[in-house]
Length: 64
Image 1 (cartoon, rainbow, N blue to C red):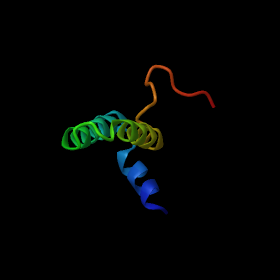
Image 2 (cartoon, one colour; image 1 turned 180 degrees about the vertical axis):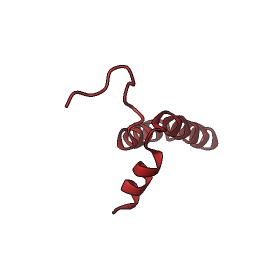
Image 3 (tube, one colour; image 1 turned 45 degrees about the vertical axis):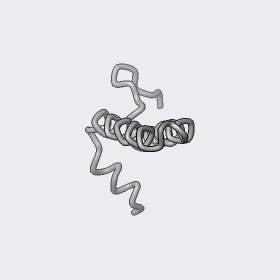
Image 4 (spheres, rainbow, N blue to C red; image 1 turned 135 degrees about the vertical axis):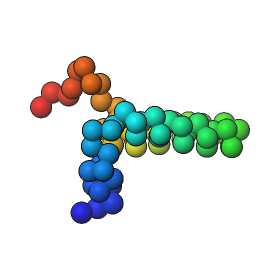
């Protein structure tokens, strides 16, 4: 089991809180780099939230 799988298992049911943490971490990086890498940080935030499932809408779950 990979490290990402273990993290996903720990965060199951808490995706919204994980998404908030990813956003806060990205904002901190933006502040410390004075926005120099804002595009890369935003892309990283989006991809990480996708991996963790934090980008899903609770009212409209994805179709399977």
